[in-house]
Length: 245
Image 1 (cartoon, rainbow, N blue to C red):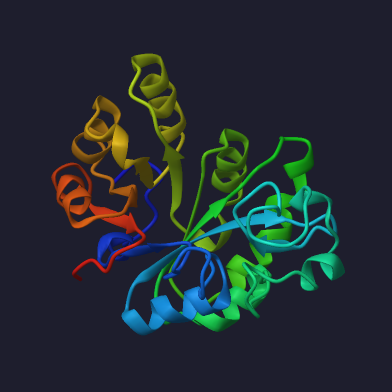
Image 2 (cartoon, rainbow, N blue to C red; image 1 turned 45 degrees about the vertical axis):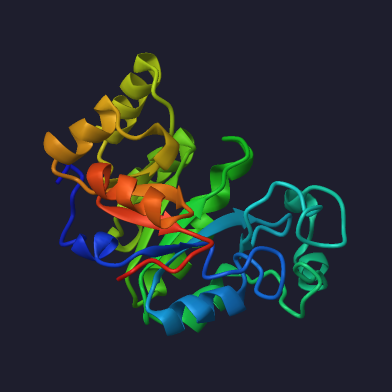
């Protein structure tokens, strides 16, 4: 593994990872919801979820920067208080937007979680890890942290919450982009989550071969795409179909 490797993280690639939980789009089981997490648990898949902070400073499981697509309220997620978020419902269902604490309580170590931290800017995100770390440290199950945002990766590597694996979420094929990825990964990351459409590439090959670290692909939507991922990555993050385990 990389120089930042801190233990046996083979569990990261032992089973397919349900993208935002095992959801059905925006029909009956919304993404990043407790029902989507429960469905993934029942099917035996690991769970990928997205985390960002409310205006109250509470980590919630939600992907978009705005609430327009998934709720009946328009506007920026980061400006909403906890009570305002608690009143929202996802995609016209009874499911709400869970806090990270609620999400972890439901999963309760039954399947692994790969948690992507969604940053907004370094100044606002200064307290992100301070708010999230106690929840991560108290959680007894298998949990990995990752992000696109270099300032959050820096904070995760500095804090290393509960010795969890830390990953770089990334994409791109141009050499300057790949060189930047190498520089970030070399700070001590343990795995990579990479855009399937940009596989293969020299960075991912370097991670797997030279650094001996796992690569997860995203987002795989068909069996054919899964077959492509098998050739260039160690596990898939999927949605829209049921991959073999």
